[in-house]
Length: 575
Image (cartoon, rainbow, N blue to C red; front, side, top):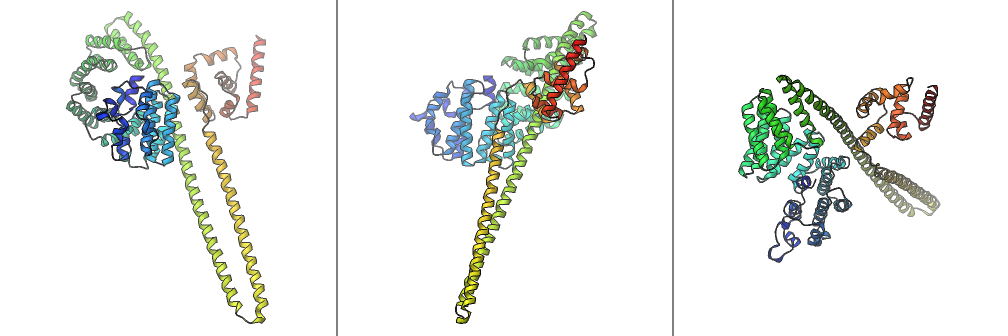
């Protein structure tokens, strides 16, 4: 996991790569940079962990002057740097990283800097993504994606790297279109040829290859290969040639494909990229098998098998391997070997099917979470717009009332002045008129006070409702296994219709083979609704959750369970 983290999370600090120059501390060196953006870009630019063994405490000591610097950009970058460093030291999700990320979020919020909010969202999402906590990573990447629509991407600190992070995540959860878009933006922002540029350019080619867009894939692979050759990076030369070989396969040019596959395999083995070597050897075996060159195919399979590990990642390769061995044994007439290969193929194929079902379920869950977040964001945005319109309307009304109030006073004074110069015989009428005007003024003030009171009360009500909403959204769910969490989230989101129940039964039956047949065997007269209730109870769901799923009240669930227990007891007694 530490190796993965070093490749996915950059914890930058170029001045940690060497001894300070001329007696300057790292903080003093970075303070010499002129602009805040340049300082922040430098802090977030280079992966210092690949060449240094510094721990979090020594890093914090070196950068202590930045932690509370008057320039918020330096303090912001410092806390992000410390969050990443702590995650590497712990090699897991940890409270220290959480604390540093929270402080960075507070700084971005206090400065109301949308670019910083995007940066901390991407880096915190990558922090969770690195340890495959997709549930917590997803909201941060969704927030970053939403906010990026309102800014100029080139203004984002260390933009190319952060866009690559978000592209990696969307590619993992299956949103290829969005991943490809971010990879392209990242590639356009790169100003020099290096391993990152090769990686991003090659990734774009890979997505086009998956879509069978051969011409576009070729263009990006050729560009990536030229970059790798320019910087003399033999590892990436081999990797890119491997993808070019796959492109040749799509064009039915197996000769060129095999030639490039061999180069990739040699480079991978030379530089101990055993996973890459295993993958390309399986590709070569597939080509040889299709050419009916079973001898070479078996050689490649044997080499690849040695490199396979007992991890879920290798399951598709093991399944494909035993399928080829099975078919070759059948074609050779070797029945005994075919039977052995068939047994192993069936075991691995069943495991692969379960794995794919779980992955599809995860994809559905992630998609639902994204849609739910998007809907909530749109609702909040609509409410914010309505509140703004309401505030403007109230301000306009208050202004009109104020102008009317001033106008009334002005006209009243004018009348008083005109009538004061009239004859004494009109004095009584002037006094009566003045009293009437004062009464009107008093009523106007009272009306104004009542109106303001109503507005304040209304605003307080809105604020109370908002506070309750924020408090409700901040509550965490219980930690359960990934599958249970995914099922609970899906079950609690919708009433279980007959159609959804059938799909659920199919997945459940794969996870608990024979469960339904066993229940019907034990209780032959059990109804479909009782079987559904029994299944949900078997999963350990609460009565409240079951009531939401079945669309009945909590009391209804309790009564249904009582009736079911009674039927079960009667069944046992009758036996």
